[in-house]
Length: 197
Image (cartoon, rainbow, N blue to C red; front, side):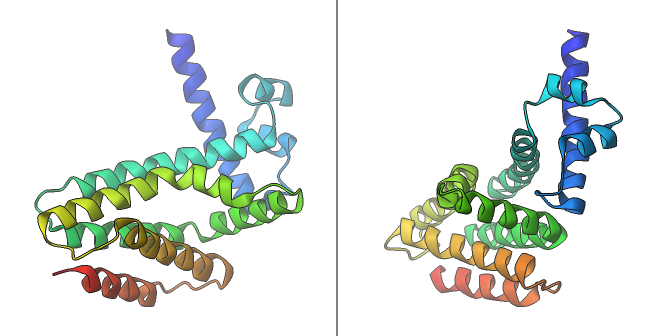
């Protein structure tokens, strides 16, 4: 049992340090050797945990998104807040996260462009990684609609609206390097108010 715990702990540490390498070096320039060096282990040892750089990158992103989802779920289930406040709060948390991790999102976008160059579909990869986020947004929208707090004819369209705002925020923050996210938050607040009764 202790060996399994140590293995998982080491795996987590590798992912944390690898994420730093991806942010500092970019996906293309990050190498298995650089990740091993940052972790203070050999490449051979690193292969015990991960088969390649892509797997490390995907798991690093997954680890980050899992932490974010936990925070979002606590907001979504906070019954002391109205559904509008929950939705606005969730969107603001995501925007703040994008701002704090601007360089990481830049790496992700570079990675997706590389995926596209190989003839693969980057949209399907993004959808696989964001399906739970879309589900969480739908959960708030459906609950708000059922309670009468949101006037929504089509939950799917409303979900697309808010998800589109998130994509726009990521573009503005990661590509256009906007450090001030207040305008983006104001547009989210306006969108939430537009569906509130």
